[in-house]
Length: 116
Image (cartoon, rainbow, N blue to C red; front, side, top):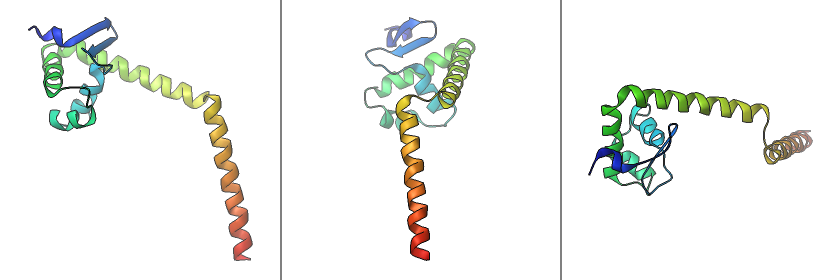
C-alpha cells in the first residue's frame, strides 16, 4: 500500500482521509497546533482509524512544505469565513441573538423589581 492510498485527493485544497469526510487539516491541526497525540486525536474522530492518523502525520512529514502551505491556506480561509459570518450572520443566528438580548433585558427588569 502506498501512503497516498490513505487519502482522497478531491481538489488541490481538499484532501480527505479515504472513506471519511475528515480532511487532513483537521487531524494535522490537532497534531501540530494543539499538540495532541495520535491516540488523543483518535478519541475525537471515531470514523478515523489510528492507522489513518499516523498515515496523515507521515504524509505531512514527507511533504512538509506543500502540506504546511495547504494548512496555512485552510486557516486563512477559515478566518475569512468566520469573519464573514460575524459580519453577515445567517437569519437564524440573528433571531437567536435577538431572543437572547430580549431575555437578558427581561431578566434585568425582573432583578431590579426584586431588589426594590
